[in-house]
Image (cartoon, rainbow, N blue to C red; front, side, top):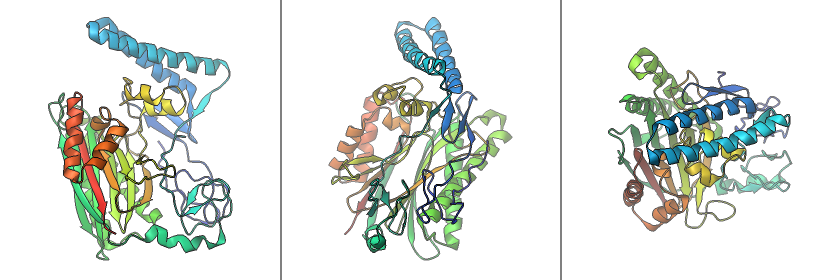
Length: 423
């Protein structure tokens, strides 16, 4: 697997986002992301080239799913057989669609096109409407030249001084597991400049026995140590440098978990999802691998269309990609038997791709991080209602976990809630 390096413009050297098509500094078209392999549960590999996935690779994975559920159907009791039959039916429809596309000569499909909506930045592109940072000269989405007076909007991105975080976290074993493989971390670090930096982290370990606990704890400890050491030296001065620091912290965690798994045969294959949020100077910086999630909520809206909930992370699961390419609806994905099949996790491979992003924060915002033990049971609407109906973050965590447990608590459940307060 190739290691993804930070993206920069080949013409002017400016830092680029993972999704940038045009450079925000010089306006030139930039290259697509490099090729990579992604690893699915069970050791299967899918090759991704410039965000394109081979239909034949995808067909092989779905076929193996049908075979697995067929075996489960033959060996199970009545209730489980009904579930297996439904899974076989769903996967068979996907097989039919993929086979038809291959018969028509199509060899690849584009993935990860369904990116999370970002809170509006202060400079809207007059051509495509994409939000841009205040200092940008060209639109990062379409390359159009931005208004000359864009720099005048800088205060909109850097204002709201005096904001405070009120944070709570809770982790629960759930109703079906014997041990809790999740790890939650909330702490405050002090940078060399004296700036207080808030660190929030949810990791969901996997690997059987107690290996999942080891993986999530190792990743958490490594990230806390890496960031503590780096911030003692300097405070990042831009979104790009913050995102690179968080990316490197997760890369270090990946290397440590992978090395530990290789050194201990009983821990081979262990790994963890991880969603990391850092709040500094009224901005939110995120790094993410897997299917734990980060959300931003506000009663007054967090997106251009006024939605009160914004999912900040993308699930790195096969089912999420099947939704992207139109093979499943979001409702079907929420109950799909493969909904937790990860193609990206920390510690399962010697190198890892890390998603990073940045957001401005405002008074009234609520930041939620959670493991998938919550989201398999609780809908987006229920997240909004619970988070906005309780003033105390501790109560938010308690109520959400109670709701997931009432629905069966099929997995460990972890929630971090942070309310942004101030003027």
